[in-house]
Amino acid sequence: MAVFFTEKQEALVKESWELMKLNIPDLSLQFFTTILEIAPAAKGMFSFLKDSDVVPQNNPKLKAHAVKVFKMTCEAAIQLREKGEVVVAETTLKYLGSVHLKKGVVDPHFEVVKEALLRTIKDAVGKKWSEEMLGAWAEAYDHLAAAIKAEMKEEMAQVHNVAVVFTEKQEALVKESWELMKLNIPDLSLQFFTTILEIAPAAKGMFSFLKDSDVVPQNNPKLKAHAVKVFKMTCEAAIQLREKGEVVVAETTLKNLGSVHVKKGVVDAHFEVVKEALLRTIKDAVGKKWSEEMAVAWAEAYDHLAAAIKAEMKEEVAQVSNGHSN
Image 1 (cartoon, one colour):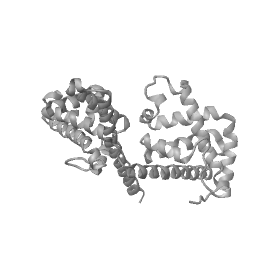
Image 2 (cartoon, helix red, strand yellow):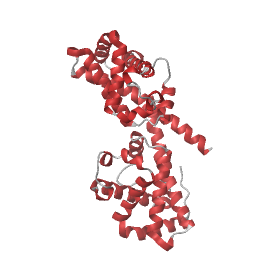
Image 3 (cartoon, helix red, strand yellow):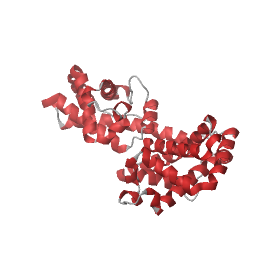
Image 4 (cartoon, helix red, strand yellow):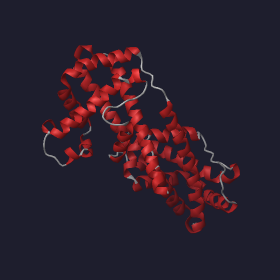
């Protein structure tokens, strides 16, 4: 799609970029710390920040990433009219789309980055800042964001269309272990859920029947019922995977699961917690039959379920975003 960016807008972004080029490291850091000030939760989306107690200003990985993102964003803006399309340096829009999709980036995140960018440029250019300059940079950024979102949508469509590959051996392993587990579903379901809460105690706040309850999980009837439902659904999706050639869930739909997970604020890290709890529970349940191959089979099956739910989450977020913009 052709990009419309006026000669005047081009002149304004180029004029401000000439000033900013003199101080890229400091401005890049300001840009990134402003993102974190506006949206502190965004810290969890960056591997070099989420487990670090180092203040952003002293984090060398953050500094390097900030420079890369700030330069890429600004250089895409100054080339916009000349190229007639969004062009990014040192990467591709396809790659950016893939990374943003994996990180769970949604429309509000793009707006946070836009706000941080505009604040940073305003500080950098001082008295040269104007409504026209703001409009030019906002327009340029919106083109970049739209190009990345288009690639995210393309990537998501590909995820939807990918057939499930699950071997006969993997199917046999999950079925063998499920036959053993079926004998003790209530206890294993409870173990599965309490393991989730042991790994991630904060997850308690995501469940209405837990967050305001002083009842220990083992004695909470609503938790027990929910645990059985989730554990059975997860395991039964795994044992049907090869036969159906796709993820099938019982007593609900993937669309509904996507919607619920979006409302609860579920992110990639939560899926990993559930996966770890599931594998630990199955390992305890099957005893000596547990093997590396069985672990891989269950992990693979779970990853397919998680991917299917995430795809529906993206769809839900896109629909909500489109509803707000109409």
